[in-house]
Image (spheres, helix red, strand yellow):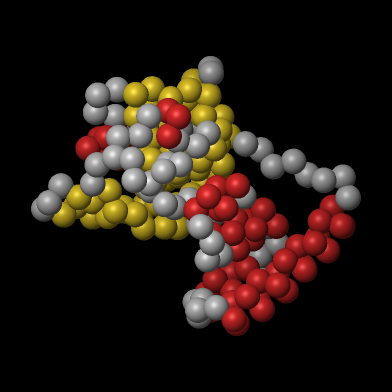
Length: 186
């Protein structure tokens, strides 16, 4: 993982508060950006190796969220592509890289920035048991995809041919049709 804008106290990144959605590591997602602070954050991120911190708002109806309105855990992401529209809006394709926890938010007039610390996955001492749980989750997810709207075959193949359990859990979590608060708890 790249070091981004690494400082002694963490990684310094611009922030985009997300309304009603959560971005997971190991996934690629489009979002539409129109708020001034988020547009400024995108512009600034292009000067920082296109790295940005995405974090969900607790209440999606708040136009100008403050610190208490944002969750403390989000995803360090990479800007893959930006499409600019004439009405001061942008559609952005983002790739989630890794979970991070906010050490500090900085609210300025036209931008929100943060200092974040990546969250490292802890390996359970009984990895064999974890793999058994994973197989059960994968089995249930396949049943879930048959009962709900159709999922692209590429997603199922990606999961089926991948050995990285953390990555697979992130991909499955992103696909679940549940509210963003439950996804945030993941």
